[in-house]
Length: 243
Image (cartoon, rainbow, N blue to C red; front, side, top):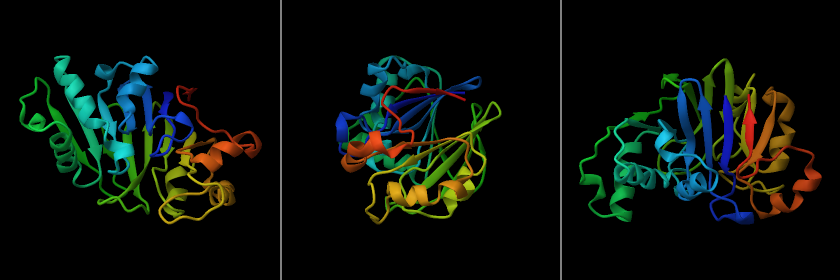
């Protein structure tokens, strides 16, 4: 499994980073974990072919995590894609993508496409076989108009877990347990803000997470300013990790 961080920033582009997007290449296919509004630009920047993406896995339905999907769909339409695209996410994901398409490009949701766009909804702690991987969602705590999830993604005998956006919840312990790589948000350094993880709280639970490797993402300005002194691995836009 090859994991490539295309976007590691927060919603506001702190540090000049792209919004959340992780590209995963496995034997069964290529998929994205979250697809923020800037993701198509990030794919072009780092040489990832959007037409090679088979599936998009969404943790929650905030713009910096899902709003790149309309651009991905339209790009595929103009490039005459024929291979199906699967978008998996929280309940209501199809309606939210439809509405976003209409707001951004009125009429776009009604245009016939040469490819099927298939939508799958997460069910709490119910594994979903999506060919390239099996995904188990764990509901977390983040107000976004639909249930938010951390995702435990298994393929090729490896496990990648991503926290999504959430304040601390013990659901993260189950999602991360035994994972080869746990990618966790660290929006703030030591301010406990509702619905988000801060670095200090995350590290207080580090041993209990029981994951082999922890990598920070979705970092705000105060975390980015402290990175050289934190002693913890943090993702960079364009970075590749092989599992």
